[in-house]
Length: 258
Image (cartoon, rainbow, N blue to C red):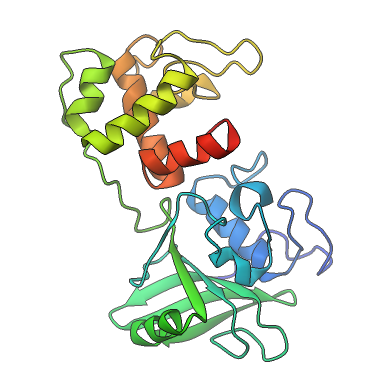
């Protein structure tokens, strides 16, 4: 935890064109933290306004179903999660401006510390899991789990599985039927399960259409030609960015890409 926001010297309440939010505001700070957790520390940033809050970027509206696609709502906060506050005077929201979003910096048993920004200043707020759950029940707060946060969940064990068959057989060996159907839906549209499929415009490559292609090296040095390595990378990407294959399919269906 701590004030690592990289735009402290910028004029407060002016537009950060990189994020789509405003310098020194809670939204810009949480945008920074979400990118940091995803390993994006400089431009080009992995996430922007359109990725995180495509409908409305006000702090309270980070809790909308349309916001943070692929993230799940939770009543068990962990570091890296995001708290959207839409009730005046609750936690760190001021009485005259209820819209606020905070970042969960630490959870120590029942104690929860959120990290916040407002009017160009960093500050922390201390609460409890029980108090947060009461606010959630009252409809005042929404907590969303960050799939790339500091306590991320994988949901799928990609270290095992059948690596002796083809890519679809491998996917079937590590996914349940519902997840497999979602993966098949996406990969069929992206590449037709062709490990050498290349987008002539963007250069996206392989079964999951990774861009840049060499990102798949994180799954294995043979990423260029091994379809199973490519699928391993694609499944991890779906989990990290969207929280699972079916969330990735839903995003693709709505946007035409993932």
